[in-house]
Length: 265
Image (tube, rainbow, N blue to C red):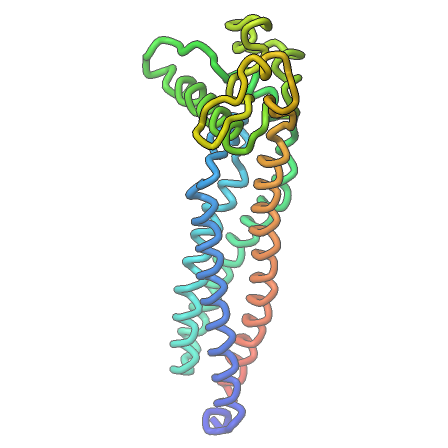
């Protein structure tokens, strides 16, 4: 039992306590990042959901869970270290390995799915749902109604706020068939009015100029760079921060394993 009374025991206790405290801080940061994304302050979730490829959001929910776990389990680990209890440390191992597996799933999901959101994916969704007539209000149509209303509102807001038009530009509305095109003739509205530039008061600068595609009055850029960059940025943040936490966790587990073994001496 010489290890209990040695200075090495106290040094290793302090080092592992600090290492677990770092994990707690990482857990708080991971939770905050995932909450920020899940809250969807940019309002793009409905667009992602309508594509049927919302795996990045699943990664965020898993990251939220593991972030909370990275707060609780290391705190338990610090208690186990202070008590120098092999049973508690063994329980810490089991819990941390479970959290490790979930965080790895979150990081891999975010890393592999961030590039799925191609312009064609959002273009197909926009043409399929934007301004689509609502079906009858019956339980079987609730999901369809949610997508139609959500996609239409999201595109209207994004095109106004970001001063963009369609996925690739105004040509999306005149090149491809869509419900919007079926409901409006080119002479009146070749593209949604949300593509038209507005002044500081929210009034259209020139609807007539916008209709004929004059540059100062029509937003000529597409909205995909804004949507795609946002999703890729989050995917990279969740994946690489997650992998960084996993690397640190691996080192902490090695240290805890050494501490567990040394308790026998």
